[in-house]
Image (cartoon, rainbow, N blue to C red; front, side, top):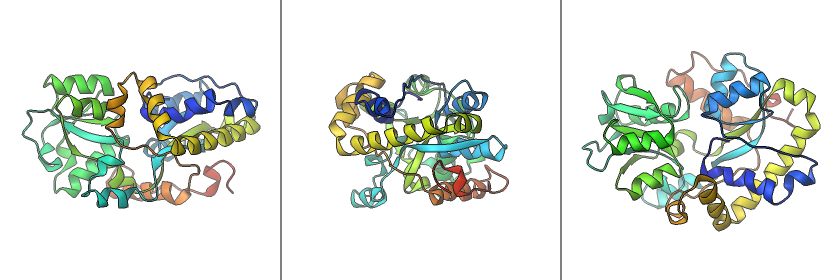
Amino acid sequence: MVGIGSDAAISFAQDKGYFEAEGLKVETSVVANPPAGIAAAQSGQLDLTYTPSIPLLNALSQNVKLKIVAAADGYAPDAMAKAKANGNNGSIVDDTGLLVGKDSGVASAKELEGKNVSVPARKAQLEVTISNTIKEAGGDPSKVNWMVLDPASALQSLQQGRIDAAGLVAPFIAKGVAAGDKLVASPGLEFFETGAVGLWVAGDSAVNSKTEAMAGFERAINKANAYANEHHPEAQEAAAKLTDTPLDVIKSGAVAYWPTSVEIADIDRVNDRLVNLGFLPKKVELNDGLILNQK
């Protein structure tokens, strides 16, 4: 886990006995960022870790042996249509955002050239999606001063004027907006469009030695994801508790979505865009064997 609102689904898998029904005893911990989680899964410190597809592809490009076990979060098939129907407002479905301070003169992602912009990890999801937004707006992301800060530190630094903009996830976006900070862009939806973005991933050695347990984890998570989609108010209450955020702040943010499958086409679309933006020198070779229980 990385301590975000979508962790609500895995808490359902625990609290509602979905793991127990599969004969699993699952212990969770929060890692600093997805690349740190991948390193822990690779070394065997963790059986599974949460990661967005971008850090996964970065790791695969470096020949790290990983397998996708289940979806953790993402965008519903109708997410883009909902955003367009609400005046191209991606923030209603996108739990990532680019914030500037309440007194900032920055009104467009293009104006971030030469500015200090924080992200949770370099070359990972928010740097990539914000770079895409800057490029689409006519700017040059290579001229941004990227800084690594965890979400809580980033929000504090933004509000104290130590950085010019922050790439954040829920619930920190809603916390910032509630304090007067301004949302400049919702970069995730435009980049990913639809499907699974956050993934539960295991190292090859863990998959090979615990095959049945991994299959049970997949079934339990899919059941929990479906439950979360059907019980949004309960999921929002769980997210508020998990992230120590007031419930009204959670409710003011994006409506989360938890996919119940992972499609190789969704991962490959990200693969193409990483190459086009220069984050990968060439496409990572993918096949259905990357995803557990798909051939």
